[in-house]
Figure 1: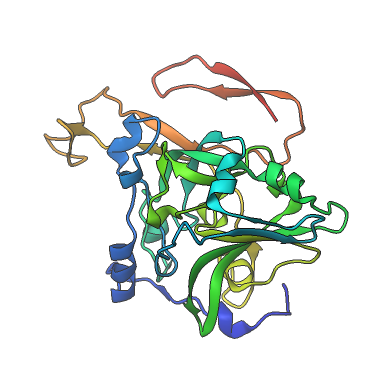
Figure 2: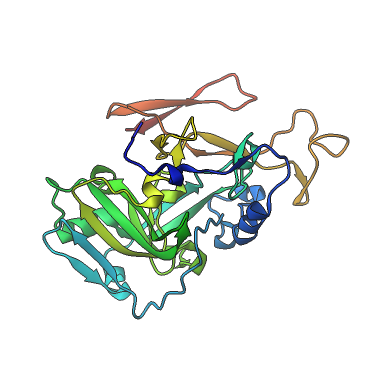
Length: 314
């Protein structure tokens, strides 16, 4: 247990009640979930993509916005949006999931956004390679330990006035699939999804993908901002910091049984008929401590006795 923390910031209100509180309803009215019916599509339309807001949505003027890259770099950068877009464009389909997905089903549950299971979506993000920009800035890979990503959104949590900021280990930030996105589904980022630029971190829960990005700082030490040290922690006792939430765990979702696009109850005469299946998708698969090389992923459907082998690279 880390003793160098303020225990007052560990106060996480919880409830055993089956009724949602006013604070939970307020959060649910500002955020919205994914529609499971959309699992039929390979990617989620922007308007159906789940939304999680920590503070007010910043309304950013793209003409005056700048991205700063500094800290332990040889060549600090300050880029306009047009300059960012001049770099080679990369498109990556990525599934994002809120770290609190499924919270409403827990007992006790934290009194915050009451997700059931729909806090997950998949979009094709377009932008520039983070690794290429870091190479352009000349990141100090000897002294650099973490990258701190600062968003424009700002608010007060437990009396602390702060911007939303998250950090990633340098080796994670240098992964080739890491993206600074200015498009979502071949369209300009909507305001609620981080216009004009956001970080997209494939494989990590959504809290790592900082929206309304305006600054990247390479640091030699561990970042201890509120959203990094006190939020998004896996704890067993109220008085402990616990472990940081990082990579997404395996979760599978099913399209609800339906008729003509309308959701139907799961039981009774209107329920699914025996032997019928709903399409399903797996939101993420992460196998920890996997040696590098070629591996085989085994899978089978619920009606098949045969396993399918899919080669994959780690």
